[in-house]
Image (cartoon, one colour):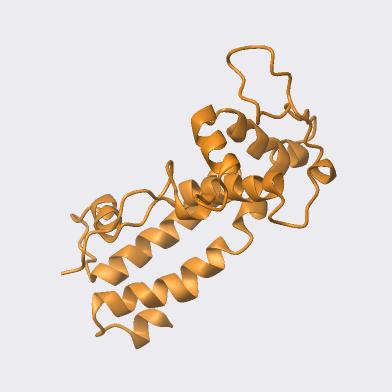
Length: 179
């Protein structure tokens, strides 16, 4: 629908339509439904690649979609879902959402070693595939690998610095202006 109706529109309008109609739908509850199968992730990335070609109006086979994505300032959807999962866990830990950490089996980890930071959680064991790739299991693993300085800065001064505003890992390149 968008490609037919917006074919002759400027690139900025096409990008706004993509972000509003398509990307917002892909990111809705993405922290929970984040796919783990490569085939599902590839389908989502292909959708973004087609959208980048549409926005730029460049369908040549010799054109680099990676360059288009970089020029538009769009990160991989996988990175954005990773960021959204960590942002949700941050909100759970700091009490910004009505989810108690006990509800998703978050237990503080042992802090006796130097490799740990004080915001680390005990890894959640999972034997079934469905549970192994669930939000809590995947996100706790990623959370525990974050540098302590990032977590302590965010958790000690949440009013000054909130996770969605400062994305240090994914989607951190500001987009260049459209020409």
